[in-house]
Length: 88
Image 1 (cartoon, rainbow, N blue to C red):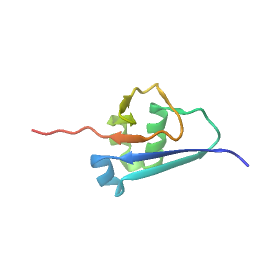
Image 2: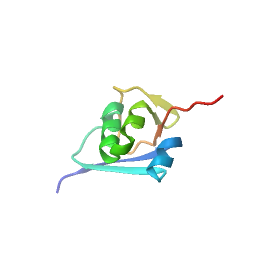
Image 3: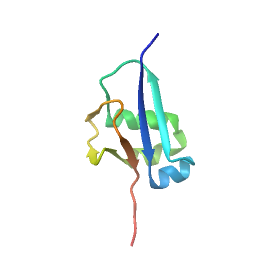
Image 4: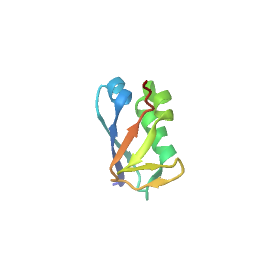
């Protein structure tokens, strides 16, 4: 049996609206110490291709901290994808 790695990602703002849900559970085969934030965004884009342009511009937040694109995020971390917002 192949081990699995899982991430539960909270979708915020326009991501949640366009996806029609506020959470994405991302599970894939293989054991890993974690994924870089950029790889996590690529996997979300693969799962929700219609949102890929917005996912690319979104921030990855782990807990209460914005994660850099090369930073490795351990599986099981509390994650959110936060799209850009504008206001006036």
